[in-house]
Structures are given as structure tokens and as C-alpha cells.
Amino acid sequence: MGYSGITADAMLLLAENRLRDSRDYYEEHKAQINAQVIEPMRQLAQTAGELMLEHDPLVQVMPTRMVSRVRRDTRFTKDKSLYRDHVWLTVGRGKKEWPLHPCFWFEVYPGGYGAGVGYWYQPPLFAEHWRAWLIENAGSAIPAIAAAEKAGFLLTGEEYKKPKPGEAPPELLRFMLKKEIYFLRTKTDFPALAKQTFPKRLCDDYIKLLPLYDCLTAISDSYIAQNPGAVESLLSSMRNRG
Image (tube, rainbow, N blue to C red; front, side, top):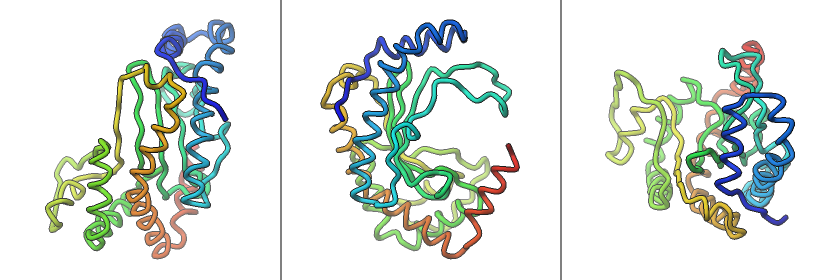
């Protein structure tokens, strides 16, 4: 699948659509938004998905499901604005089937774009588990984290207000302060995003994150092995919330 590119003008169109928040405006410009933003994102999703499928045979590759919609679901939120000014794609096993497993993502927004790797969901008990796992498996975790950070992907995530770091190798102390973890890198060079070579650049970045992805997957596998009902419990609570 080719790549038609995403330009700064395309993101301005998306921002204008969000600002106007009008069904009439959206319907009038829907074809443009699809051609200039949604279709290129699906092209990226296809390319990245096929690459990751070679590494993890459980990755799902269906571009129409991997890319977010511009129209928001406002049923369960106080924010009733109809449209987003950003679009993202995810590459993973699927949050409905593997909600506690990691995924890659890529997002575009009016100010730039970002990519990274992390988890779909990180409930408190799971967070306790990954903190303990990192300490116990520091020998494999620390090099994977270093490789991600060397590529420019930085540890991000909400921290505890009153953290209790406990004992951990110096390289992992900052993880003990986190309620959640994911690695993110952002950029603002839209000319690169418009080039046909961009899918390869994104895939090259994901390849650099594979050791970290494998660590995160091992964390998920070990947590589910110790808590066989964890996935169904999480999915049930999500269904009950709406």
C-alpha cells in the first residue's frame, strides 16, 4: 500500500473542523478530511501493522479499525464537542481481546505528531505488578529502556502525589514513582510527515522499540498467568461503566 502523505494544511483543516464543530461544515469537508488525513493514517497503519505482525503473530492488522474517527462519541463524556482535532492509530493485539497488553501508537495533531509504546490500560494492581517485574528483571528491562530512550522515546505517565519509591536499581527508581508508564516522542517537522519515505521512518522507530515491547509483553503475560480472571474482570468493569 502506498502512502499519500499528511501535510500541515491537512492538519489545519482538521483543526478548523474542530473549531467550527458543525455537522454542516464536516459533511462539506468530509471527503477532504478522509483523503488528506484518514486515508494516509490507514496507509501508515497497514505498513506498521504488517511489520509488527512479523514480530508478534497476534497483532491485528485491519486499518479501518486501527485508526481513530474524527467524529467523537459524546455519550459518556461531559465534553459534547462533536469532532476531534487529532487522529491516532494503534498497532497491537486489540484492546477488546488483550486490554492489558502493550501497543504501539502514532498520533497527528495541529502542532505536530508523536509516536510511542505503552499499555491500553494500567489498573492499580497491574501497575504494582509491572513495578515488581521491572525490579526482578532489571537485567533485560534496563537495556530495553536504554534503547528506547536512545531513540528519543521518553518515559511519560502520571506520578503519585506522595510516592514511596522503595528499593530499586538507580535506573529504575523513576518507574517506582509512576501510576502508569508509556514511552513517547513528539516532533513538529510536518514536511517529513508529508514524504513518501515517512512509513519507513516510523517502522524503523518501532523496530528500535521492539526490545521494550517484548518486556512489556512479558509483564502482561506474567500478570495474566498469576491472575487468570484479570482480563475478563477488566472488560466487565469497562462494560458496566458504559
